[in-house]
Amino acid sequence: MTVGDQTVGDETVGDEMVTVDGLRAWMVEFARIVAENKEHLTQLDSAIGDADHGINLNRGMQAVLGVLDGAPPKEVSDLLKTVGMTLVSTVGGASGALYGTYFLRLATSGGDTSELSPAEFGAALRAGLDGVVARGKPELGDKTMFDAMAPATDALNAALAAGERLATALGEASSAAAAGRDATIPLLARKGRASYLGERSIGHQDPGATSTAMLFAAAAATLA
Image (cartoon, rainbow, N blue to C red; front, side):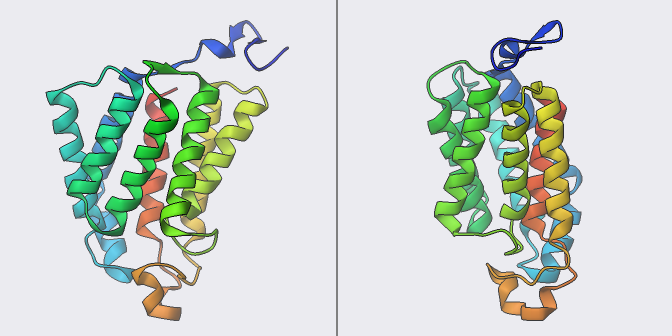
């Protein structure tokens, strides 16, 4: 068995490309999950935030679908930039800025191409994570979306570096995001509006980490 751009068993790891159509399917699935869970996200946010995370993110993702349907992008950078700019303009607040920055950084990393290798996709996710850090300055344990996003990104890139197939890496990323989401429940919030509550923020699941886990679950369901 060899890894990298060689073979694992009888299959070629380098053949698993993330295409523009695949990225669009990712956004469609994420929008579906958000719409299905918008009330749950809003309930989580009502406990420690502004009670609008599900409503706002659903509005943003429905707008994303409308834009993508109207003018389907042909390159990775165009699609991801469209997603980022649409979320910034329609979601608003911290969530819009952070998710928007995330996808805009993905777009810059992805570049003007119609497909990405697994390694390039992993690098794009790392760039998106770095953008979230630059924008919001989160750290692990702050009780934010970063608590799900960072472990997911690390898990995906570690799996790919170990020679795992993209489907396996995406599954591990989704599991890591879900674990990070659940780990926010006992945390004391140190960022955002939830931090104003002090110890009252303990015992509540972070809505941003929850929607981030949905994002990676959607990736695992479509990009594999």
